[in-house]
Amino acid sequence: MSDSRRKYGLLAVKLLASLAFLVAGLAKLSGQEMMVQTFETVGVGQWFRNVTGLIEVGGAVLLWVRGFQLIGAGLLVCIMVGAVFAHLFILGPSAVPALVLGVLSAVIAYAHRDQAPTG
Image (cartoon, rainbow, N blue to C red; front, side, top):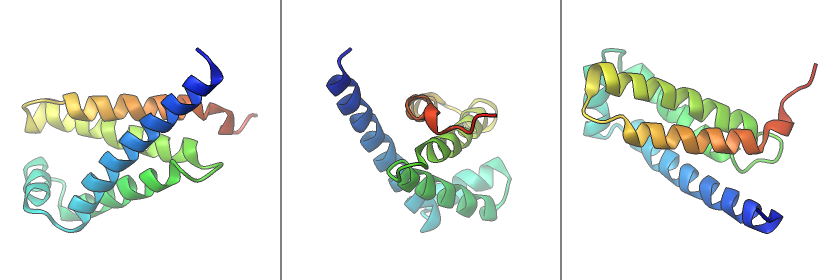
């Protein structure tokens, strides 16, 4: 794959992921009824809805900050792992959207793996 195709492909993935996480995070932070009910069903409390929303919004922003893309993508991968488990074991019916967003976040993290500290 050519460098320009890789560059623009990554740009498209980052744009799609960041828009999805911004929308979802802002819905959580603004207390949308569906989000309140979701976290009530999971049973972790509304404080966790706010923390999750902050991480989603913050992670989406970090995807665009040079030197912090790996951290942002890593945070979003962690959130989506939790979301997949919540859908599989508590919420149902489908974990596919969370899985897709998790994979997109993992692709972004892999693309910015050079930002990881070396020891």
